Amino acid sequence: MNTFDRRLRAFSIDTSFAFFLVLCLIPIPLDADIKKYLVGVIYFGVSLVPYLFGSGQTFGKRIQKIKVIKNTSELVPTKYVVPNRFYLILREFTKCCFIIMTFGLYILVAGIVSTNREDGRTIHDFIFKTRVIVLTRYSTDRTEMNRTSSAEKSLKGYSYDD
Image (cartoon, rainbow, N blue to C red; front, side):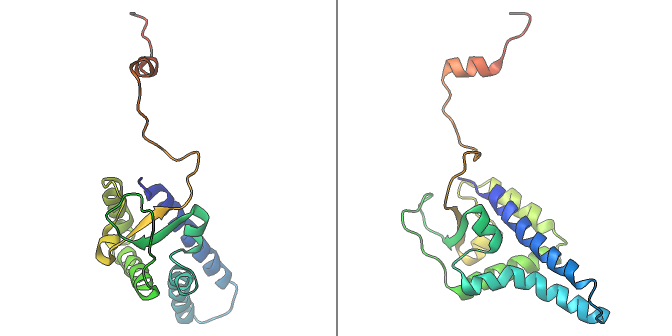
């Protein structure tokens, strides 16, 4: 199952949280250089610190009920193994650097790669031999349905010429 929708929502939650923390810096009277440094610390902190204490989930991933695991050959793993914290932090740091260096274009490329693959892996998943799995399905998740011929006919609709 493709997880890019949830991954994008989780990234948006994490980025929004970091942006909120940066907005809290505005009224604090500090030197501009210190504020620039703190913005970087906040961005990387929101992205990396959860991996020090959790097991493969940032705040956004926890809300979206997705998790980073080691890659296996199974599309739906029966048992999953979380990579060690060093690899999780390095993976997230690499992803953050790709996003910053490409001015966000990496997210678009990662989305294209992820949606065109059955396992939903992106470039940083290939580098670190990881993948993201869904822990709980939502009723709004898109699923592939087998359609019968009568269902196809009713979905097709009718024209005035019939």
